[in-house]
Length: 265
Ligand SMILES: Nc1ncnc2c1ncn2[C@@H]1O[C@H](COP(=O)(O)OP(=O)(O)OP(=O)(O)O)[C@@H](O)[C@H]1O
Image 1: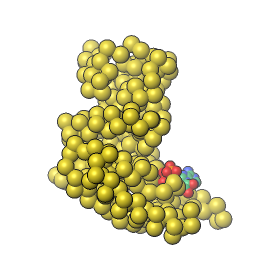
Image 2: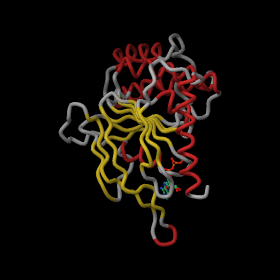
Image 3: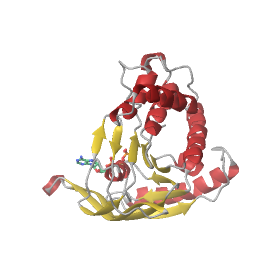
Image 4: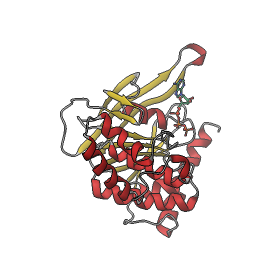
């Protein structure tokens, strides 16, 4: 496994199976011991199809980021297995985490550089990635010269520069205003459809999960378990303020409330 500032590339070497991109089987994760012991995840199982967009939804502290870290190979389960079927895994975080001394283009180039791609090709790919997130011509700007939304676009371009088959996204738009977030949902959906990447997207925003996901995996808290899986049977492209999205969001929210109530949060 190689771990870089921008994320990680993991290849488990397991036999790739045509349609299953990710198999999580009986996964538990315990942190600490004695009175400080926290069971973050308990017996989580989930299969994700290649090209599927799965949203992990749950209350704060239910283990969403822990599960993502296990898939990305940044952490190991206490029990159970995570099989990424030989596929490359990439990461994108809430904080754009751009390197301030590099330009937007320089930041996007980092994963390409780490993979030993030559300069001319790096430049070409970076330009393509920046236009994909509608930042063509911005390659020479430094992060402080960009708005929050633009920085997150650069981060999105850098995430796609990892050329991952499975992209783990940990609340990537959580800190953005609603309008910018809306635009980035559109961009992400478009790029996801163009690239066919498998996405595992963590959020605690129900509407965002319904807007983006093919399926929504609702996790319960303490310990994190799969409480329910919702199929999102709404035509794309979706609008976050559409009646269909609102209707399913109401159902999911009610179920989420039930889970939160059960644990006295
Ligand atoms: N390295 C660690 N050491 C000890 N406890 C940890 C560690 N990482 C996570 N935890 C605990 O495991 C539980 C799950 O944390 P995690 O960050 O995965 O939740 P989350 O659902 O992503 O939360 P949020 O939505 O607030 O980001 C929490 O109780 C957290 O305190």
